[in-house]
Image (tube, rainbow, N blue to C red; front, side, top):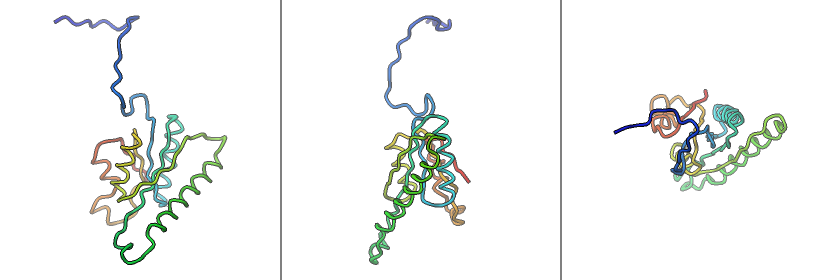
Length: 164
């Protein structure tokens, strides 16, 4: 078998598109998980800087927890999580308005339901995220049981940045 090892100078080669390709020309979508905690807001800020520099879409994702126990006791769980989502959107819009003209970042806000890990995985798959940015867990028990960030890293599907 003879192979041509010369550099491809001036020759036309055929490129066949294979569909979606993650992160080949820089990220197109950077997903940041937000839940209102300080570490998640720092993660969103960090992700916004990445998105701005890479001219990528910043997908801010809030995962509404499903709490069947609270719902069975008559607690207005759905309304509470909707209020959190609305508060996050308002805070994000306010920050975006303050920086308008200084930094331009394309962003979208998405809400998914479920536990945080499954919701972020679903969001990353649905939005075809090239990278995921999350805040470090602020709960002491997660050091033993495992945080959402650790589970995302172990899944190994996307580059994951954990912001302290």
